[in-house]
Image 1 (tube, rainbow, N blue to C red):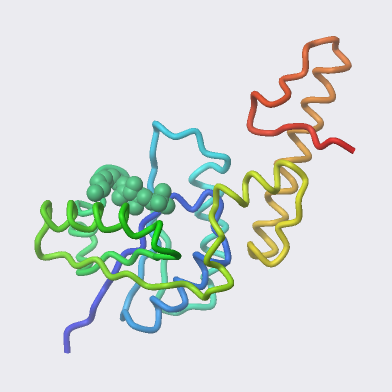
Image 2 (cartoon, rainbow, N blue to C red):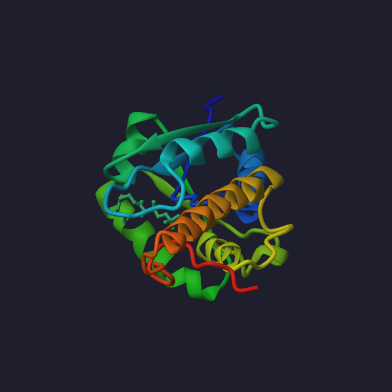
Length: 188
Ligand code: PNS
């Protein structure tokens, strides 16, 4: 019997419980699922690719048929290289659909043999995105239940380091880079 391998490509900056929910669902319908982190030199990510990989590896260690990898270039080329037959993507709401449809059709044009499979995460994650998690965490809001504990811890560590850096700048008499950098100092 033919085994079906799929890739789940994305930025995962940081990975969230919504991603994990989708990975779990994907792992149940595909024989093999590769979570593929895009190495995008044009983006200025919060977490390095190595950090994201470590977090995803820890998050998926309980799934026998899930692995984590990184790639650059076209997703379809990567899929072909690893002999995947499908691309898994999540759709949270209608607002995701237009962009996802465009991508899926472009990928089909580039590589007609490859199918995109859309899955919906649990409703409780329908508003959840990496961008919002970054923003809420940086502004001191609670991200409990939105990301796995280890991701929350990594986010807190990053924010503490950024705050220490901002404090040092301030005490050295420099203008604090409030609002410009990745982190704004939390107002007490
Ligand atoms: O998590 P994201 O940022 O929504 O993931 C987007 C991703 C990585 C799936 C998309 O940007 C992508 O496939 N990039 C690789 C380059 C590529 O293949 N571009 C053409 C897409 S039609």
